[in-house]
Image 1 (cartoon, one colour):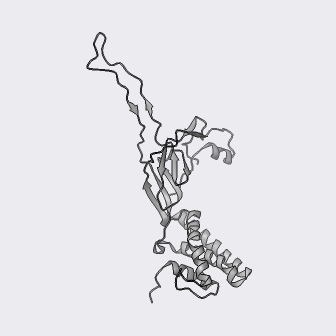
Image 2 (cartoon, helix red, strand yellow; image 1 turned 120 degrees about the vertical axis):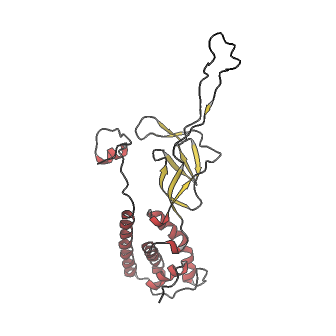
Length: 250
């Protein structure tokens, strides 16, 4: 017998069955359980997607520059105390963005503000000084000094790896489905059953599934390197006070 098709309603019904309640026909159902489920489902789905960098929800995107830059504001110190971070460009985040995973170029400083990403990946525009090119005693009519603007450039594309809002339940991995089901079951449990012991059991099962998911998600990717920075120095108990910013810890 083939498995029933995955759907948002199917996920909610799994939660209702776990607490001994009657399944609903759809999220537009007007019964108390249907109304409660429709209020909880979408926020709890997005919350769970943000909690872990799920591999099925990873996406890559190059970002478009917005016409309004952040004004070259120096708002935070450089992590190696060699200057100040000056945000020079604002980039538009994707519509399905939920959580940032990585930024390109990797050595850029950045900050999320609203639905934009501020970064210093593009150097601030500067002007080169006038340079006299004509030889002595020449009238210079064919070789006039010029001034050209340096608009800044970067060898790497401006982009991100991010966790996206995945609405299609058929793209979810089984453990994500299981954890969301248990989250919904806990939220619906108290109002339907009033049984705190059942809620505790659901929580324990949920934490076990989430821990397993976190372990598997970490196994299914190349190990991330840890780089030496001032923050890492402090947390590791080093006394130098100066991180190199590019030396990998061993």
